[in-house]
Image 1: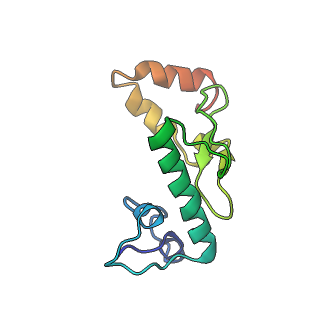
Image 2: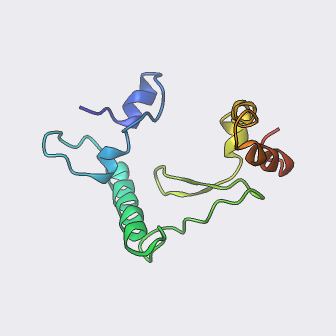
Image 3: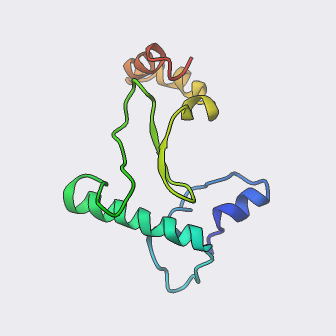
Length: 123
């Protein structure tokens, strides 16, 4: 049975882990929901994002907060967090993403590393 993200955090574990989002997207008959009311609201928003993306090619709809396209210039990302999802700035610095620049530099994505560094999103 998947553990709630809040439970993992309270245990000092890894935060959000692989497959944690599934309980927000699908009602699994074999697994009773352990989502809080705020998490149930977030689940509804996430389901609207995914459905809208599949239907129209954009996650945005009248029922959800706007999901802005990623921009190297601003480094914005969409935060899927309670109480309400929204644009988050400074994600790379807060989450120590500089490590990945060294990895990108060693791949065919070296140009992406250069763009992110030039834009000041990572150092």
